[in-house]
Image (tube, rainbow, N blue to C red; front, side, top):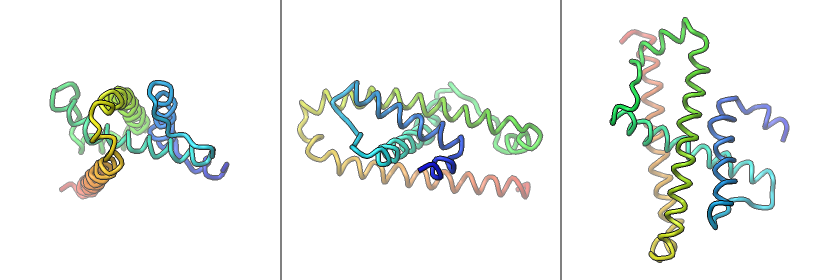
Length: 163
């Protein structure tokens, strides 16, 4: 277990595990939902995966939405890559930035979970098919994440070759 924790980067801790723990703990006290099981190791994986999903929601939906409404304005990616070569703190600042985005999504999803809980008692369909709906949503989420990450890698390669 210690070896596994030693391999987690600060990015993994602050963008996946911490938001996942925060989400699962608050969800358990705020709603009737409970993701925790009797195994500490399984709980760690559940929290990590929850945080991973939350992070993807932030990256794929919250960030583009906030950019669309002009709440956020990003520097051009090529400028970010060039500035990162000269400013070693830029990666750390970007990591903290991603953590704030992910924590924002934690609170949004907690409100959404509460709404689902309230509406679910009225709309039986959601409870009957909720696992299937969740699986389809997660598939869609990770397909979009895969595409975004592929584009990110391509942008870095293109930036290296100044295309």
